[in-house]
Length: 445
Image 1: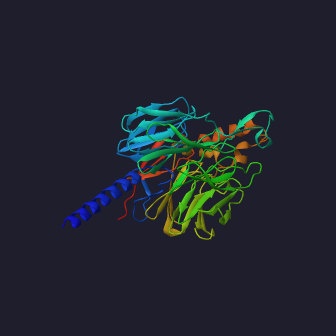
Image 2: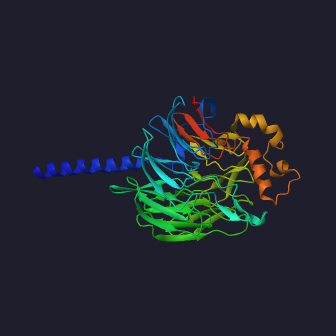
Image 3: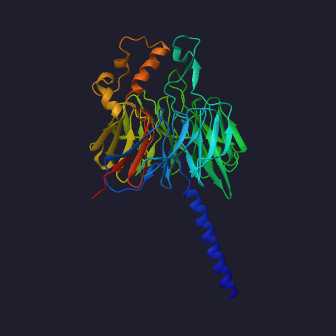
């Protein structure tokens, strides 16, 4: 009897501890690790629930938990708004643009700012818990980039929208916040106090968000190399080099891991499927001179990912890389898609936001536009499409300032490079028009 009682106690202990640890892991929210949400059938976007105005462009992606939406803005603030009404709960001031999205764990939000710090902030109050100083955060820059003039000018890459988002690695009772930096390091710091545990130096800025699978962290950087590190120690497991050539160098997209395969896109311009354990190429997809900044989402043996110059959302066979179909937007697709039920959602650089029925092979969709897009489309778009040459007119595109001027015109449309998040049948995303949007989704009958 005593033996049975002891076994019973052991059984309940194991159940309790197992549930505790699994609950901890499920409480971690990250906008690039959680791209599939609950839902049924095809659920088109319905009506605007609310929108919240910041004073800067929004490039980061929202996360939602405990009836609160969290997002950063180029105005230097990180915001917490009420999920139902969009009213401000609190805002946290940094001294730089907040292009990093946030992760949330144990009622703490983690994010980075162009002020050179990564922060841990109380998710309920907005009070700072700790900050970690990197060697500096900045847009990726080169002197005389791509041969543009003046040749001695340090030029920021105009398409480098993001800073790395911290991800949380749990190991027994300890937790690490792992993130990339413009200084070329990937850092792992204690999630509770921000003390450095390890760092790994690469050859260029890391603005992609690391992805964790078991005890491995995967990420790519502006050096064009994709890395797999031991998440506990920071030791390199393997690395894979993409092609290095003018205008087609660097990895900005975050990876996705599924069934022992790690998927990611690069500027070189290919989308890759590598063996997650060895880094060996399983297949690669030629993106037709299109950069891939979008992070992929995988469902039902299909990889969905956006492209730049072909304006496409691609549907690729996860095992072979063969293209199943493509859906063409009206501009560059840098927004990482989200899936709920049989619907995929994503935005484009022209200010359009799409929902697409996954069972229609790209034929059934719905589109909503930002107010700015509706206002400026006629003067900026060419036959409703983003067209760099059309806006450039007779401009000399070898001059950097002319390229920047064209980008500023595009920004008038309210481009969407933020990745959507879905909660309680509402979809949330940010726009370069400075708004955080919340739209109701149509419920399946």
